[in-house]
Amino acid sequence: MTGHTTASLTLPLGHPEMEQLETHVQSRLNGRVQHFRLVVRGCGLILTGHTHTYYAKQLAQHAVMEVTTLPILANEIEVS
Image (cartoon, rainbow, N blue to C red; front, top):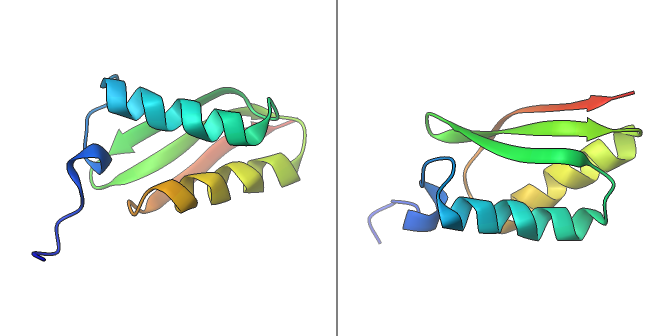
């Protein structure tokens, strides 16, 4: 192994596999986060969206951590 991540983890935003990753995470959240998106920034991810609870924000972060090895640079999911 060379230490590289798999190709599906380094794809640009809008690529079908990135959209598939977003869809998978959304299905795990059961509608708790609206307008959920993953933004690739450099070598990491930024989570965006809107929810009503900090618990749902945390669930989203853990769901992403389960399916990718890319670091989460920021969780910008708004809670209100």
